[in-house]
Image 1: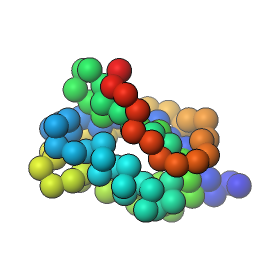
Image 2: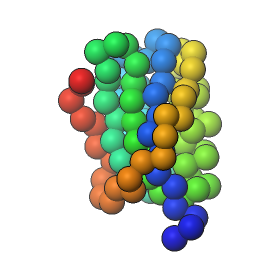
Image 3: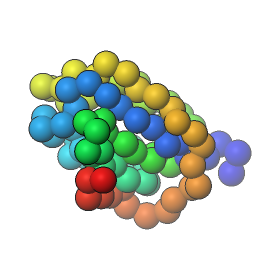
Length: 94
């Protein structure tokens, strides 16, 4: 299980109102990752992504670009997170 990673991340820029959460949920699910994504009232997108290290690394690289129409100014890895199982979900904003 040492190949499994779980990270709490924050993405800032033009990442709300451009389909970023839906894109991230589709991309993470297609990569076999679990976790969640949500908008923050402060304007960032926040996520926890869990899965194999190689898939997490690819997801981080993809998240730095985002979907068409997004502009990612910064992606911060806030901390390691408690691993989650199950589907990747979109949570309500907070």
